[in-house]
Image (cartoon, rainbow, N blue to C red; front, side, top):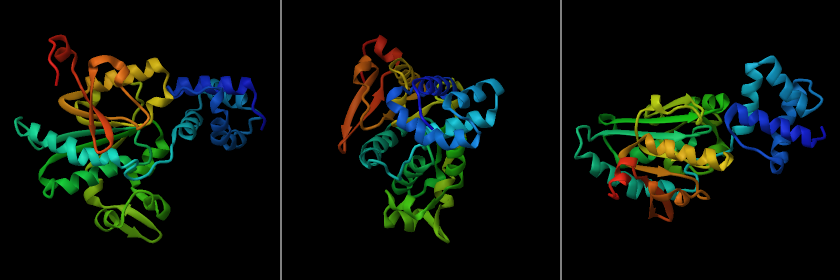
Length: 286
């Protein structure tokens, strides 16, 4: 199916309206590879026709299928590794120390935003279990969200093919945290119990989510407009506790957002500690 400039404009406009992902003519290859089969399935002669069907008929399944096709990204366990090393060796030990002075020293809240098919939150859970032998006695919750129903469904099942675990999971991980099921590997109940999956649009209000000690929001804001990207990170900062840590993608930087985010360097990784509006207003720095 030949793609025209009208096709690109129509798809980009629909995707922006549905999930806030910003595409342009440079993503024509992605549109073709992700939506070509879907357009044929729907019997549409063009991508314009596909977008019109989604808009005019109000077909919720079609709209979700488009979102799933565009947003579902390939990922892997312990992706890039260095953020997880920084989490293990720097952020979590500091967080544990800070928590000792609070009324709830064993309560930890973590958010894996745009978790895709679950490898990131499960990697976070494994890191926590490595550090906390008696983790069952702690109050730990990892919220994992994504806008794709298909991604959330796969993540919730926690079952991965051989090639999926081979990319990132070590033999030690497989032995400790997975259960063999025929040709696949299933996340163990001990790991799975720490993670709650939920469909969520990052453009929606965060008020119902509570506050977090650690947030992973990696490689999703790059698909937003610059204005939406800044709003997202400032809203995430508002949802973070006083002593907290924000991990973003390796190619992302929050340095141009002023003093709201204090960079930390560890294990060849850069992560951030958000400064609250109140802290900034009185001239105190963390």
